[in-house]
Length: 191
Image (cartoon, rainbow, N blue to C red; front, side):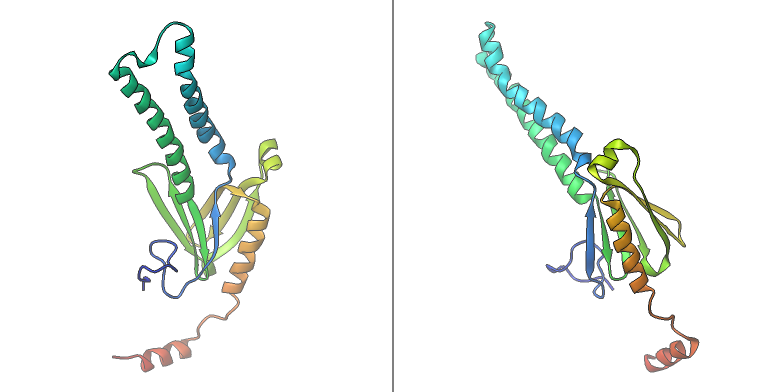
């Protein structure tokens, strides 16, 4: 059963019985290039009227140029905000029952994958390269009955891997239901 919209719901499809234990966003490094590019172009665009005025051309000579200039500034501010919102929405949520991975690659490309904690077989991590080692990010690879789920650009993958391993061990600690218990449950809950 899916929980109704409340403040406790942190993601769509969250069940009533599950609680969010961990929310993992991609490392801030993934924001560096798009946000840096957007902010750099924006700030150089702010200096453009001063540069043009110095060399004899005046940007604000016509309303059309003013409109184009302001539209350019709004575009780059929107670009920076959009990159942040995509980074914020692209996350992995670990609950008491499952691991849910939301991938957002644009306005029209969203993907949600999930795996139950008791179906996870192995969790490993990989840190590749000097940049990843220096800034402490890498991949966490979750292997399950269903297949493999790779969480790329994960901050502190060693800590995330050990935390996920502990959560999986906790989830699988209870013994499976026996046939007798299942039959008793069905008898008790017949309609």
